[in-house]
Length: 433
Image (cartoon, rainbow, N blue to C red):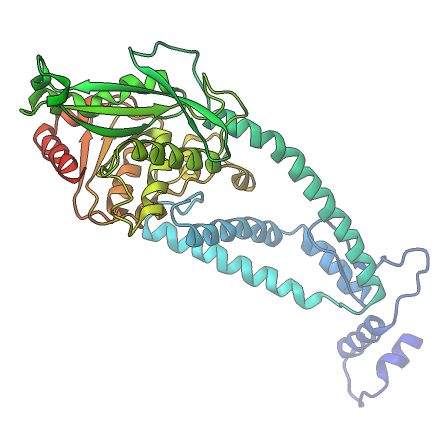
């Protein structure tokens, strides 16, 4: 037969039938394709690979390979590899399955990643870049990628606004707690409203105003609360010290509503404008008290712009705050959301504000006293965030006040359980104003 003749060429006598058949298949593999009706007939154009080969037999093998367990193993391993890379590049934004896992699980995860790289890398060997069919198949792949990008945008645009509404939500009104309303200029010239109030020490009772020493304080509140609620939240930091200090002193504290939070109007805030507006109110208050450094306290969401301010001032000790108080801070917003399970798909993380507080607090001035409040019953920000923040902070005078029974909005209990240390901290604050 012709196939036997072609298979026997170049072979010596005594060649086995298996060798002849192998040579016949090899010659067949090297023949060019001649199917004008289907120029991609021998290309692998399945979703997982767009690869062309001179050999129809090899193309069939590639098509079969697309749906073997090895490919799905590669896909899962690739996802884990992406998670690991992000985790290594942005350790505070730990949005992967590798967050706080033990050595055994770590080894399994790394094995999956390496195996994935080997499988994906091996598939590249099948690519023939200069073939017309390969270029045509590449067009098919490009169209698929374009469709995937379009789907990604369709999903991410509403997810972006949904994320903002979840992260930055306001409450309806509230009373001003006998505070006085004021107005200052935000980062882009927008006029923002805030509240200011004076809190006097017990020793100030019956004293003339000229005998009382006033200290400025800026408070940055959390989400789900505006400046009206902030008026009450800040008292938790000050109440015990004001009740016990012997001198006639008072704190003039200033707080504001983020843009989009009542009574301020506009779109919902973002990381950029919250940071910018927080810098502006700090500078505004500092300008009202020449020669003094304001205290800077914050709660929940407000701890993000606070660490941004600490990072900004860094070596500028004179321009920064006298001291800092962080109540229930988060290491990063990405990690917080991942733990809450609001937006688990990794692909949606880029549209959510990161608020990488751990990275920023490493750059704070080491001479600025710092206190961190932590609550064991906090269902929004787990206590390990505060522990990581405490470990990352560059301050030489830092304290961590923890209460197993406190919840997210209970700032008072962690302080009362560590009252003596808190009083010392407040003394160090006043000494630096």
